[in-house]
Image 1 (cartoon, rainbow, N blue to C red):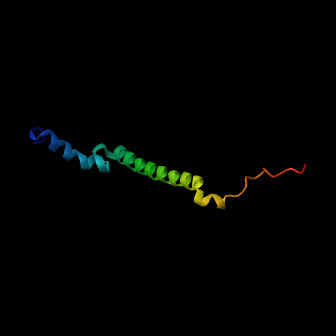
Image 2: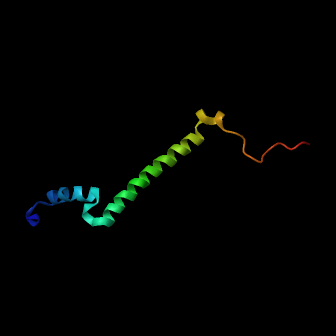
Length: 72
């Protein structure tokens, strides 16, 4: 009976269903899925920003369009 288990064991028993989304049914699984996509998106945007600011890739940048020198 779960009511007779110590609180630590009850907590550990709930960890797996919470981790994979089984505890909350379909909304829980969707929450786990979208939080995983969010982490992947944060990683991708972080790498993009790092590459954009990195001095290693500074020589590969082209001049912005529309900012040509005007003849004086």
